[in-house]
Amino acid sequence: MASIKIIQDKCVGCKLCVGSCPFGAIEMVGRKAVILENCTLCGICVESCKFDAIDFKKDEVSNAVDISKYKGVWVFAEQKNGVPESISYELLGVGRKLADDLKTSLSAIIIGDEIEDATKKLISYGADKVIMVEDKSLHYYNDESYTDIFVQLIKENNPEIILLGATTYGRSLAPRIASRINTGLTADCTKLEIDLEDGKLLQTRPAFGGNLMATIICPNHRPQMATVRHKVMKELEPDENRSGEIIKPNVNIPKDLKIKVKDVVSTITESVSLTEADVIVSGGRGMGDPKNFELIAKLANVLGGAVGASRATVDAGWIGYSHQVGQTGQTVGPKVYFACGISGAIQHIAGMSSSDTIIAINKNPEAPIFKVATFGIVGDVLEILPLLIKEFKKA
Ligand SMILES: Cc1cc2nc3c(=O)[nH]c(=O)nc-3n(C[C@H](O)[C@H](O)[C@H](O)COP(=O)(O)OP(=O)(O)OC[C@H]3O[C@@H](n4cnc5c(N)ncnc54)[C@H](O)[C@@H]3O)c2cc1C
Ligand code: SF4
Ligand code: SF4
Image (cartoon, rainbow, N blue to C red; front, side, top):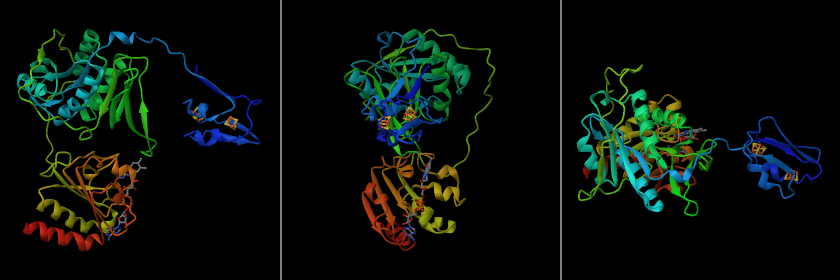
């Protein structure tokens, strides 16, 4: 078992370790460092001590696997009614780069019913191979059968990396698979790249409430698994002339399921979905009052866009959670993002910074939102929005 202790004779009381612990788990008692009960045994403090006074023992790695047997990058191609969801193309975009860096192949895994047409699309968006499992019983996503089939495919093919969308289905499927095959999983990655020295997948995601970015590796187990939020990665331009291999593997389709999906009912949402919109107009606490969100809706309407919001306004009950943009809301990447009366907290920026153009309106010229804005308007949002609505209507 992992353990940590301060070697009293070596500790000179310099306090360097205190600031290095992200959990506040080191305290000075007199002139000696003391490890507190909330220590998570992460090991970060060890390097801060120049006097070798921190004795840290890592967990022995048990049941490590022969990682050299694992090859290829896989992407779970989510589909609805046989049509791939846009997250599948985004995953192929980043998967292509990873596969090229590793000089290996990129495969899309698609499970469903009447999915033959989708395979060509997946190839045009970058897949070298499409592994398709088709059966009437797989029309709707089902945790039990999809997990079972995916695990069979992994055991048969030993992929090195598997990417899934951080969607409702992906978030349910990924941990089930990871647990069944005894590997790690990094959720909600915002950046994925290959360490060109050792070929490991570097999986970066926000940590500690979004205040720092953590890069996570899975050194001893395979496959390396990650989920990625919608709109974080860019899809490639489709190339209809690309050719690829379509594989129909022989798998057992589980029949005796405990979970039975009888029907899927779509909820009626606003006309333009937040995650698909090309233009998003978002309001923050600077709107002053919930009724002023009418201006946000009007501008969104004129531009054919969707309405977004900061968490402060959602928490205040001004607008529903489905509109929240940010770390604990939706991740969006429209062509144009209007931030109206939004300060630009890191947790908000985490959800919209990949927008092509960001237009910020804020009365405080020092507001952090201006650091990420393409265009900034310093002024009262309640005066500026009516002017914009008028001018865009004319245009
Ligand atoms: C774990 C965690 C997760 C979080 N997740 C999210 C998330 O997903 N999304 C999110 O948005 N936040 C999130 N937050 C909250 C985040 O830290 C901020 O508190 C929040 O984004 C602030 O919202 P705001 O910008 O609307 O409000 P404020 O920070 O109060 O900013 C209001 C802004 O409006 C400006 N303003 C005021 N009046 C006017 C006016 N008349 N005209 C023009 N400008 C004006 C002010 O100058 C100010 O910059 C999270 C926080 C934590 C700790
Ligand atoms: S950094 Fe090392 S020497 Fe300095 S207080 Fe911490 S344990 Fe002691
Ligand atoms: S091992 Fe991690 S949690 Fe424990 S004292 Fe060191 S830095 Fe803090």
